[in-house]
Each structure stands twice: as C-alpha cells, then as structure tokens.
Amino acid sequence: MTFPALKMNAMTLINFLEEVFEDTWLGDQFEVLELVAGRGLFRFNPRPHNRRPGGTLSGPTMFAFADIGAYALINAHTGPKALTVTTSLNVNFMRKPDLAPTLGTFELMKLGKRLAVVRVTLANESAREVVVADASATYAIEPDRQA
Image: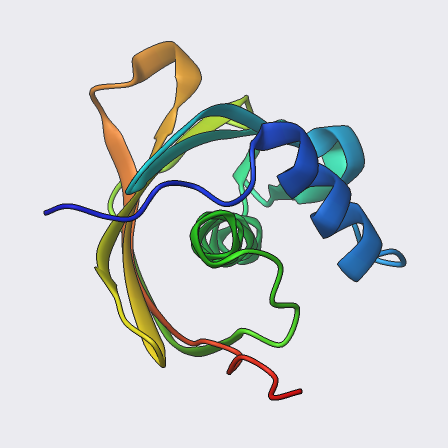
C-alpha cells in the first residue's frame, strides 16, 4: 500500500502531542523511534504505576499505548488534527508482558478523508519477536476547516 508523505516529523509530532494533551501527556514514557510513510515504531517506557498484580504491564496501559500511537501515526500523515477521534479499538492480549520498555509497530491499513485504520503490534523490547498484544484501531479524521 502506498501512503502520502508525512506532514510531521518526529519532533513536530511530539510537540503537537504535548500541546494537545498538555495535562495528560506521557512525557518521556512515549518515544518515536521511527516514522516513515505508512508506519511508525514507538517505545513506551513504563513506570511502577503501569504495573498490574503479578508484576506485568497492565492491560489499560497497553490499550492507552495502542490508542496514542495510532492517533500519533494518523496525525503525522494528516497534519495536526486534534479532533481526530477513536471510533473503535480492539486489543487482543496474547501473553503476559514484562514491566519493561515496550515497542509498538503501527501500520496504516487505510487512510481516507474521513476514516483511518491502524494495525498495532506490541512486544517487549527485549523480545521483539514475541507479540504480547495486537490491536486494530479505527479513527474518524477531523474534517478540513472551510475558510
């Protein structure tokens, strides 16, 4: 699949996310490792409050990582559209993840004028080949504003 060139690089994307989520931004917990047309590789650096009983990374944390990463990838392609919103997010938890840096591979499956679909694969950084969760996310894209 061919996707348009990015409209934001990693730095402008992070600045946009910090501005949009000023009160809830993850700070250095979310990192952009790679950002190319149609794909992003992001890292989530968990803190003790991201732990669930049993000492693993919590499901709500992985869900949030999938959501913010997909939102970030879409905005990197559309340009800043803060009101792009999640319409559907399905996460399948495959294995217990370590409470350790987690990599997310985010791939655009569709980028239309009104909807975008992103496939997400999560794995602990120390065992990249072992998928701990996969997800499919659909977003309604903020329409262009008429002058």
